[in-house]
Amino acid sequence: MRGPLAFMRSLRETGEFVRVDIGTLPVCFATSPALVNEVTVGKARSFEKGRLFQRVRPLVGNGLATADGETHRRHRRLMQPMFHRQQIAGYVEVMGRNADALANSWTAGQRIEVHREVTSLTIRTLAETLFSTQIGQQAVSTVSRELPVVMRNMLMRTASPKLLDGLPLWRSFDRATTNMRSVIDRLVVETRRSGQSDQPDLLSVLLAARDADTGEALTDEEVRDELVTILFAGSETTASVLSWALHHLSQHPEIAKAAVAEIEEVTEGKSVAFADIPQLSLVKRVLDESLRLHGVVLLMRRALEPVEIGGFRIPAGTEVAFSLYALHRDPEIYPQPDVFDPDRWLPERRAELPRDAVVPFGSGNRKCIGDAFAWTQATVALATILRRWRLHATGDHTPREVLAAMANPDRVPMTVHPRVGP
Image (cartoon, rainbow, N blue to C red; front, side):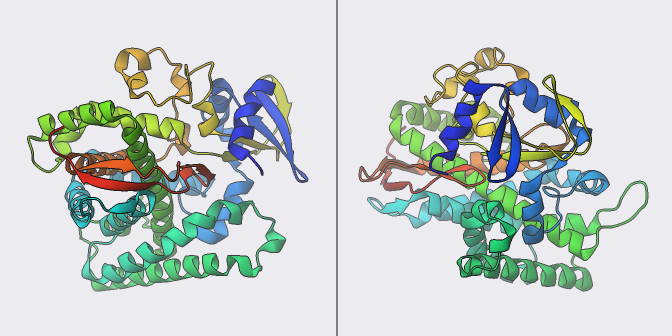
């Protein structure tokens, strides 16, 4: 508890498969790319979501992130069209408009708290792509207000013993989750009743989805749970990566200068278009490196049957954990693992890495379904901000990693200055 991130990194020094007793719960940590791949891909059918996701389920519902078995397979199949290239391209206008609004709201010399600013940006953008109809505006407002409260407390809430669920400590968290779920419940019912389910938003895609084999649609409750899951999964990742990217670029002005030159050359001074995104290779490498350094902290699986992992036979019911954060800072895989170096993602250097050692969004049938959406939003936001502003650290605080679903920054205080030239 005093240093969970450092502790998880240290387990690799003990072995590839390490038993750790967390209270009375024994957990086996897989610490190598090969074993993580074995759990998530090679022998994925021998595992279900573990204790961590069991505790999350009553709070966020039985969406794609928490569902198991046939429910997970059916929902993933139904939701896949939501994240096709053409669908994501349609959301770039919303992403760009909100990023412009944020950049336009700052004034020269203003001190801002970057993580709070980009969290608001990502939540509002995500909510607007989920609910584009007029009746969805209340949901956008409620989600923008309540989701930050939930995200700040989610990991500690789920990691706490169930007998502590009634403590006053969780009152604001429980109220926020209840408010969010109830407003989305009402929106789903009203949208279906109003016949406005042909709009170009994710809610409409979910309402219209039909199973190819049975023709069945998702129930209102299933639609609600998937919307809540997308909000949780889609907001924290993007906000955290953007915050860290802006922090690291402030420490490496030569990389920021090169990124701005690339942005200007590709966009020709216009707003970022969907067609521009594949050409912003340095911007992508900055985001890739920020996610490598500060990625997903902890994931868990539970063995459904006796299974052999890395030569060890574990019984059914065994909890297996792995940390993508620790995996991506393994010095045996990544030279100088704590150094911010976007060029490690140049094609020739990327090709030298083991394939199963690069899993920022997970792997196998549990790989994040919205990775392309998140990366598109992060690219549009970062390019829009960089071309307008130079962000400088205030000097009175160095961002510190804090434990959440991602290794989030605690605070990123910076001052903004107009960019003149690259």
